[in-house]
Length: 372
Image (cartoon, rainbow, N blue to C red; front, side, top):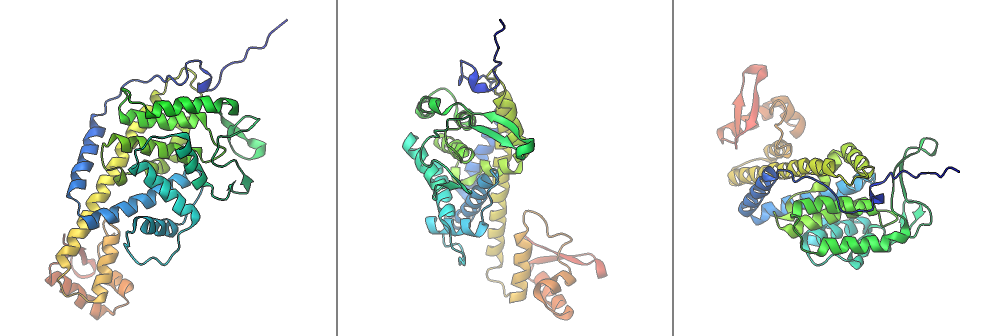
């Protein structure tokens, strides 16, 4: 009589899970970038910091939701941030929502509260993500680990062409798996915080303890671990924003890792190191842009400018760090300010005289750029 042989398919089915195997990768470049972020942060003034903090938080909240296919209004997120942090960066004509308030609260809690991570805190994050007790039209268990009797499957495609990407551990095993996970997260060990954040992100996703929202909470845990490591101001970079820009790659690397029953997570580690480097580089570029704008505004604050000139300058600055394509031409100035050709030429000549803009080219090829 033949006996059926079950072939293990998922990484958690290895009896040694979660003792992941990976090679220590060079992290010098990443530590160097974190160091640069710290150095630039120390030179930023309060006004710069508020503007940059707001922008990073907005992008993070929108990105971590968009990775899961949930689209949030930028205006609602901005309103939540201004309200919760009392930033008052600008007049807010939009109201925040319960969802936007909750998501921003979670992000702030991960970055600014290095208290112990426990089940109660995780479940409070989960409740905040699903204040109505529903995910879309589906009712889910909120603030508690899942209790499904059937397999928790991660699928894509229509029901006719459904593809199973992953089957998570059974619900009955979740309490013990999560107990071990939280113990590992909170204990001091030899793993540096960069590796630990990457592994924590993956480890939580593999357990998949909740009915929904596991991806967002996994990325929140990643931020929490990085913030505890105090490598740089945790408010000044966003891993989720970088993941969102590489969403397809993110899911492919996850797929590959989920099915690697040898517990080898080198592909995940290598991909995340590159991602972190790109995330910090992006933050450094954005900080430099904020500083460039601030210095420029300081330069022109005592200049005599009319409303048309101010509007054109703001339009050019808004595109930084990209250049204003083709420079500011008379026709562009007319379109932006609704000025006549004569007035546009006079305004632009005045900006050149005040050393705010520089003139390039001749005749029809003439264009103007800002002088920083």
